[in-house]
Length: 283
Image (cartoon, rainbow, N blue to C red; front, side, top):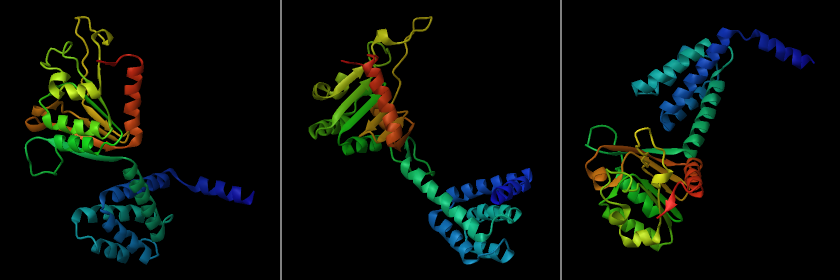
């Protein structure tokens, strides 16, 4: 009973202002962990552990002195300023433990969900990205069990056709889902012309039949406009690029390569459901 009364008393003493300061501190910890490089973050945590005390100017000078990058100094200085306001509840070791815990959680999340930006277009002085065709070719080459490709347009992609044949030869189950040129007026050629007889005969090829599509009041049909790839229920590539030579060489395109079994399985489940309900049918 005594412990329960003590806990109730502590809760009553937490003011709304103190609670807001605590939340602000947690948010800044999250920002620091996501902004600093791992090695820099480790040096900050080590510095806090080496000086077990509350907030003091000597500790601040010591920590900031290790950070030559002005952006790093700014976010750490903000953290220490907020910590000063909340120092009754946190000493330096507590702050170090909070940073370590947050860093561990961020690392686990990043490992569970690995996302890479993919870009095709004019070269810039900005970040360097892998090109759409590079990512897709690597995805097909690395596939061991199953591969699904979805595209609105498929046209003039001999490099993709070659690696698809190699994937089929090593036993990969290849599933292609493409727009039907009989429905989409903008597509002059179908998947057979684009990929060749061998791939069409050996892979599973699905289309969205016209009679299964929604129609508006003016008689216009919906389009299969997805551009995506899934490999081995683990890698999910979502892109603006069609499977065409223009998309790989001339257009400005962007996409993301996601390594996540959870998300890849969600998309595969959606596709399987469409097949089971004959929304997507084999040609």
